[in-house]
Length: 247
Image (cartoon, rainbow, N blue to C red; front, side, top):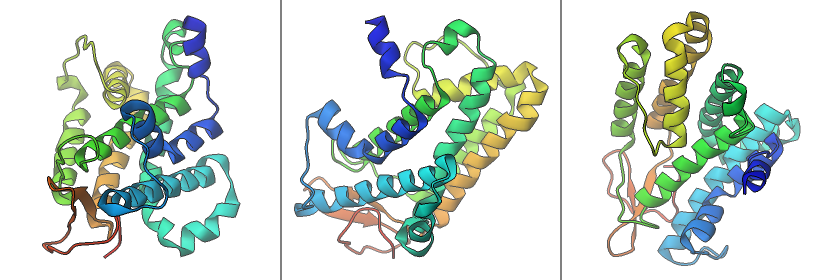
């Protein structure tokens, strides 16, 4: 079993980006036993089309920024995929922070999960799972407005800036994001260079991400209790035909 786990977590950066591209389908099928058609029929199909488009665009941006695949740039620049650049920046924030955290972990802990690319993928998996739950696919919809989400995360990352006031203890079921950020905060308490060069930079970048998404024309979509598609956006009560979409 140990060897199987080690194989599972030794994915290349390219493999990780490909997994991020297909995260919505992977999670629905392998975690929840749901497979949706690519014909995008019905209200749920229309919403899922938008989620699929979002992760495919994010993966293309990651291929460009992390793998230097410049052939993607024209499409990323001159199509609606340009709107999804902040999502790739957020994923890269996880990647960059994990790379610095890994340098400061002992060998035994480094072997548990073998690359910062995998940590990035685990963090993105956590976010995708939350999107699927909040949008009503696998749980009762709990849509959160972009302004509120930005405010809550700004307050959260402001709290993480104050590393001298943070308290640490054993938590049996940490999420990937919480595990990464709490480990970084713990290191930042004593490692001043890490705190100034990497930890603080990460916190500012995450705040910037949520601010960009607050100002983005992309809208929050969800399935209501009746299974109908609804959209939250700028005081409007307008029904839309797709999930994450432009005004």
